[in-house]
Every structure is written in C-alpha cells, then in structure tokens.
Length: 382
Image 1 (cartoon, rainbow, N blue to C red):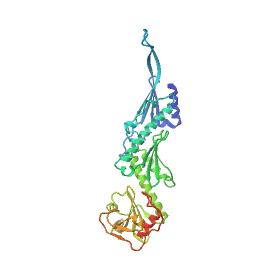
Image 2: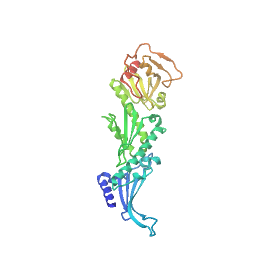
Image 3: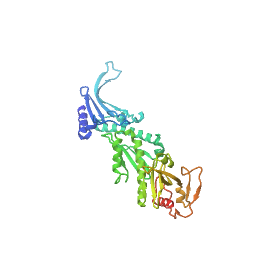
Image 4: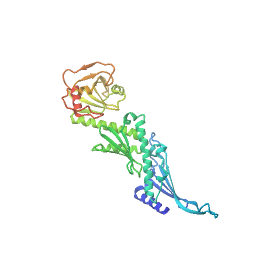
C-alpha cells in the first residue's frame, strides 16, 4: 500500500508537479511526506524588493504513515485472557504552513475534519482535497480583507461585490469592479500561482497585457492582491470612460501639467481623472473625477504659469456639475470643492444647452457612464 501511494505521488511529479512538489520516504518506507506548493528557488543574484516579505519555503505538508493498531478480542466473561490482534492502518496528518501566499487564514478555515483525511488508497485524490481546502482558507482570508480592510472596505464592502465560489476542485473569488465588469481570482492547485481572468470582455483586445502586468508581480507578492484589485478597478473605470469619450470623437487626457496641490482642488479622495478638452476653448476642460463610488464632474479653466519651463498649469476656476439636474433638464453649476457644497451660488444656464429630450432612461448606476449623458455634459460645458 505504501508503495502504491509513492508511485501515485511520483506519477503526479512526472505530470508537471515535480517543480512544485517533493516526495520523501522515511521510517523504513512506512512514512511518506508530500510537500506541495514548493516555490521555485530564485537565482542567487536576484534581489527581493524591499517591500516584499519573504514567503515560506513550502505551503503545506501531507504525511501518510502506516501504523500498527493492537486490539483485544474476546469477552470478559471468559476466564482466558482476551487475545491481542494486530493490524495495520493509515495515519494521515495535514500541516498547512502559515504564510502561504503571504497570508495567515483563520484557524477555523484551515481545520479539516478527520473524516476528510481518509486516503482510501487514492493519494492523488487526498492531496487535491487538501489543496482545495487550503485554497478555500486563503480565498476566505482575501474576501475578509477586501470587505473589511482599511484601504478596500469602502470599495468592496457592498453585498455581492466579493463572492466566494466553492467550485469542485477549484475555489475562486468573484470581484465586482464597476458597472458590469467582474474579475475572477483563482489559485492554481499545482503551482500556487494567483490568476486573474474576466467573465466577459474585460480581457478583450488591449486588456490582456494589463492582466499579465498585474499577475506577474502579484505572484512575487501575493499578499498585495487587494491593492492590485484596486489598481485594476481604477484602470477599468478609466478605460470604460475613455471608450465613451473616443466614441464621441472628443480629445481627452489622463494627466495635465498640474502640481499636486492643484490636483487636490479636485478632491483629495480622487483616484483618477480624465480631462476632456473643449473644442473651441483649449484651456477649458470637462473633468471626470474618479472617486470611490462614482464619478464627479467638474468644469475647469486652466492657465499656464508664467516663466514655467515645464509649461505648468494652474486651475483658475472650478465649477462642479450636478449631472442629475443636467440630465433632468435643470442645469446648474455649483461652486465649492464638491458636488454638494454647503455654500456656493447656483446659477441656471439660460441658453438652453444641455436640455434633455424624453428618453425614458434612468440615471446610470455607479460608473455606468452613458454616452448620451456625456454628450449632454460636454454640450453644456461647450
């Protein structure tokens, strides 16, 4: 039986597991230890980035031993002593390593009931069960971190934004980024590598390189998954907005030559900007400000700083657009530093631009920037 388990383990190594799994025999070949998710050794001259915490040399160990069990037979009523019968059985022990993928799941998420640790002469099935259990613990840790972490709870805490899916053999997490865009995070059971994939056209032409650019460094520091998802979310929001801008034939920029202090005028909670230049007024921009829950919209005028070698700009005037009222035929500009200022004069545009005909469409949900809404905003500013 021990020989059969060893042959199964060696068979898995020959099928591509050899670089990430080791098999050792001990105790006169009565004990077999299988170590999984063993990382590849880094080249001696490769330096680890200072922010990267070291990962364990293995992520888990499954030990299968053949032990002798002595039992007494017979009945107490007989005068003769009960006979002792010896037989053999498997003893299975699983040791998940703290720090696998750079995280430490809750103990209850890594507790595996004894009845699950039965080998039944199928070592490969048992190993895959252990790895699936370990993966579920890691995924639940990331889910909790996304929903409760200081950096991410305002983004991913709404119900349904992070969903754990206990697929047979391949647990995963589904993370809602924005609009109808969802990314699926999985862990390869053989290599321990995190993989990001989309549920639709998120990885369409032009987006695959971004997935690769995020995934490669992420697997050097997998505990950075929450931060990577925030970056992916912001990039996806920006891409979707730029598609609408390009569809309308407008000119836009992700950055302008504003100093950090000038950019703060658009809100210190901003996570990105899209500056749409007004056709006949090159120093004026309709700005889409990306915040945690949705866009803010601002109309700004810019002026170049005198004697600036880098053509630095300053914002001369900022007006916040109330998109709900524009889309509802009540066009206003509000002064101040946000869409709902406590003070500030409101003035109604009198030339009729930005009026909306009856369309029956509702105001779009979070980051669902409709083309007709963007067209109306631009027409109002222009």
